[in-house]
Picture 1: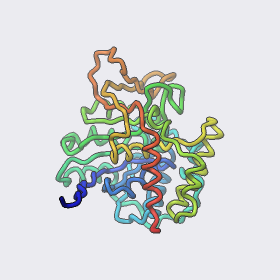
Picture 2 (picture 1 turned 90 degrees about the vertical axis):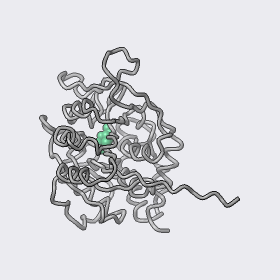
Picture 3 (picture 1 turned 30 degrees about the vertical axis):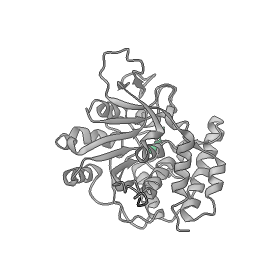
Picture 4 (picture 1 turned 135 degrees about the vertical axis):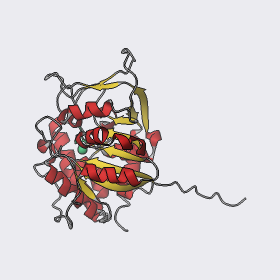
Length: 320
Ligand code: RIB
Ligand code: CA
């Protein structure tokens, strides 16, 4: 019998909306490194830092992985109706403390994020997956302004929310807290949604040993090691954890290998009124409400296989 012929999978085409941000940066690098993913374009949103910083950081990361072909379009500089709050305390004023990279070699593309996404949706032959790893401000615009193109969206996979405790307030995870109104619009959109929340991403941590394994293996790997030096150090000091959760990379890993996650399909709504619990994702785990299921929610992850996959691809970034 002839040797088994490897089945060549068609790469999954995605658009990534992000707010780099250390873990967003690693998500971009994982997507760029993975043959299973075709990163068609990047859009940016204010969140971890100001829009000018998240946009600059996305350009820097794409320079780092030598992908000048991937366009970057900037989106909303603030939440739909609220004042922007950033995570400068975690990611630094520029949003990517740690490495000292060169300035980006190019500017962001001229069209804004929504116009770019509309153009992509109009011209894609098959529905495309949108991945969101920052506040959902740009995704809310896609829902409200591009209803005529929803059939060209395969799904939105977003890092955000939590079944239980938040990470920015006791009730809320950062991405949802920054723009709860946007998150509510996305939850009520009727689009296929996958929520990668804190119950999953808090298991997806890397520590100093992973930074050490990357250091000296190439320019990209050194860059990630320097990101981890800052990000791991922050989480060790602030929370006493062994490492830093690489929240956003889980969205990409999930698309590479959906078997990594345990999920449930249930109703998720967002608190947009209470000051005490603003931004809380209310996940009806036990089906006690009459609210219809609208989101596939991650409840667990195979940590070992996630870390192996992430490290394997990060270590493949620089030519040997
Ligand atoms: O709560 C974690 C999320 O907030 C991640 O996307 C991180 O980058 C920050 O944006
Ligand atoms: Ca992010």
